Image (tube, rainbow, N blue to C red; front, top):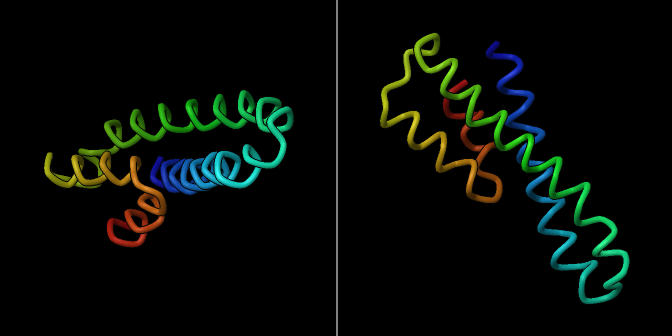
Amino acid sequence: MTRLFRTIAFLEGISYLVLFANMLFVKPNDLVLYKTLLFPIGMSHGLLFIAYVYLALAIKAQQQWTWRDLGWIQIASLLPFGTFVMEKKYF
């Protein structure tokens, strides 16, 4: 399950960066393309975020994380590059 969590964390971080890139670079130049890309990127990011939160809770005991560690792991999911830093620190 740890390997699955690390994979989901990586994919969630990538989807977050792709979502930001879509907002910063595509939206100002091509609004139609932005709207076309927003739904699939946003939906995949949302599903990966939910999986990340669920799996973090599921493997808390297995990894012997404290509630404070779990809190930092959850906060990492809200920051760009946060999941990458979290993966290096906790695994």
